[in-house]
Image 1 (cartoon, one colour):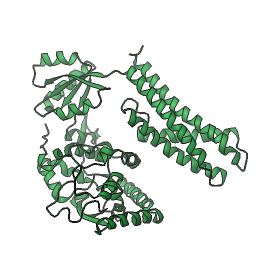
Image 2 (tube, one colour):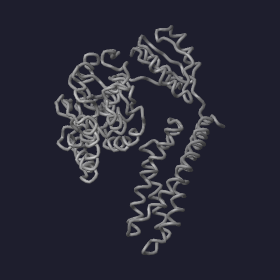
Image 3 (cartoon, rainbow, N blue to C red):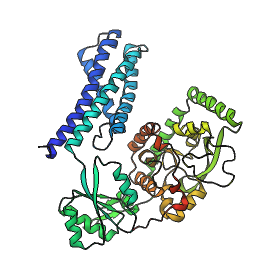
Image 4 (cartoon, rainbow, N blue to C red):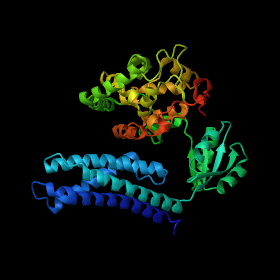
Length: 458
């Protein structure tokens, strides 16, 4: 019974439904107990049901944005944190709605008490859900097929999730075909790690024929093709790849979003408060300048001066430009706080307002650093098909130790698969990564440009 795909899906959907129903029931209790009596007019049953529906809908929307229902992908801490973020924004919006319904600023204490109950339920639900999921889906027995590229980095990533994946065996792609297919049959799934296209195509077709799951590290050409359009002029399938960045209507909507978001971030009361506080602390530390400007690259290799709160010592790059490392002694005490909270990036809202940057896009690189990357990875220039961003796909879904090549893949995926909804998702997800330590640190020494390996398209 446990191995039935339908049964497993029903159990997972039931767990998600219980989370939605449980938190909606908690809201109903506090609404009925603390707020409904403050209504100036009678609130009928249908009105209550609509409010419950709105709460559940908000929770589902934010839950999908933050991956709060991705039981199969997230670990306990990540899943619980995603749930907390989803309910945090849901409760804020519902509090504003309650205030509008009661025609006054509602007492926030019941909402805060409700949030505490939410957190307790989240911990219990996450613990049960992870346990049930492990019972339904034990770790998958996997075979790694590798080529001349060192697969150790990929293996280490899979080893961080041994609750889901266990690489039991590895085999070179040049192994005799009969032995290779025999080995594939004795594993639940296959990982293809940077193997030549000819080998990859044969293995993919074979695994497809025997209904075997395959995990593939994509090449840049794969990501480019994912954004290709289908041409139906002939009786033979034809894909058309147009690498021109965003369509004009997409660029227009994106610019409108940039202006609205940057204006919100520039709300005088909030921005000036942060500016005065942060500015005073930076100046008091070493009497140096508050802001730091630097030449960066944006769309079509245009250069612009990026504006940031200074997080390093004055003249920290006298010896030349280099990336900030973890525990870099050039970073000031206040700078560590600014980088950990990403507040050092806040002044870039002015770059966004004047059109040099976008809220979402590939992070801008210095010309000299970009040149070094491109010497090893020529395709790194593909990122300049769109404006540089304050936050981006690679920042949200990557980590501090994600290699430049993999970050390029993430950025290229964003460009090729661009949707307006993706920008909203990344903006909201940025609030999540602000509290995750590994997303706020510098790079490892192994990531410096001197150690970049050239990736060849096979």
